[in-house]
Image 1: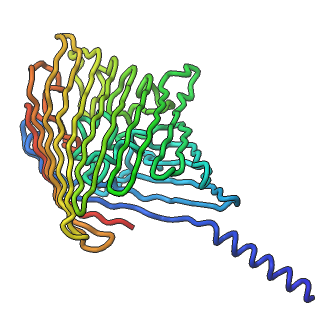
Image 2: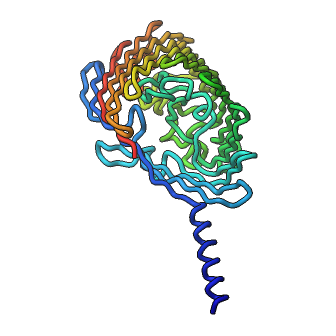
Image 3: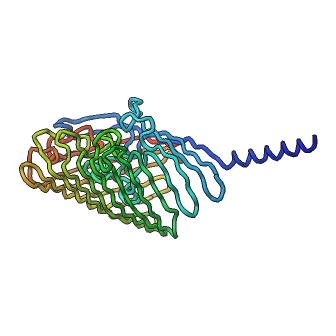
Length: 381
């Protein structure tokens, strides 16, 4: 009887330690606000919209200790629209992230599923939209995916541990079709953080973007539908006291973009035959933390847009400005105000690419100017 009691106690202790080494976290962000857009096809627009400074979401994150400093990990994250309760990312149940994998303190992690690419992981944190501001501060049409407009399906991803502040990683998204390169994606990136310094760089390429629903990037995910996409860039931030200043450069090109599809959520007319579209984005950003509860951030982006259309090669220049103020009512709840303005200079053609379009606006402008203002409430749990 005594031996049984000892064995029972040992099993209970073992079970307790196993359960203690595993955890599941429920988390989320709810972002809802009122937007004003100065020019939506020639008219003003007032909207209640969801998920701009932060995408509205809820998710589950889990860890299980496997021993030897190794853990099994998973994450399921669902985007949602608070305005109407609809699921985000094309109606997917877990459209933001859905992966499982293993991680080790010494060797890093390998994860499998729907995940972010290396541009989002390593380069985006040096931009305003990928750091503190979100959607309205994205580069035109989010052409470089620094605002994670799309995720990568069928992806195998490696992320290294930190080596004195240096991290690197890569991702491969399978086409899952007999045409091996039809809608596949690969990316690599690295970052370095030390004191107030953050530097990051990344490269990404995809073939057959949006070609079919089973590949790395589905058509209802992609900002551009094209035969080939290539993005690369680098950025740096430096913090000194309450102030942070940053610069980022990205270069994105799209070969044979769809003439009847959507570019940045805007329908491109069939008459505008595009052979290629290229963007170079030069961003300067800054942020000042006046108190632990209040900051102001700003951004300016100069974009050189080059597109090869039926009418010839056209090179409009895009000026984008953004300003944001954010005040925290508590640790988890804040109120923010944002304003974004875009102006396009350059030759005029019939293409909608010559009309201003701020990511997050309801539609493209009827001319070369557009302004969007937003006031919103955000809560994290």
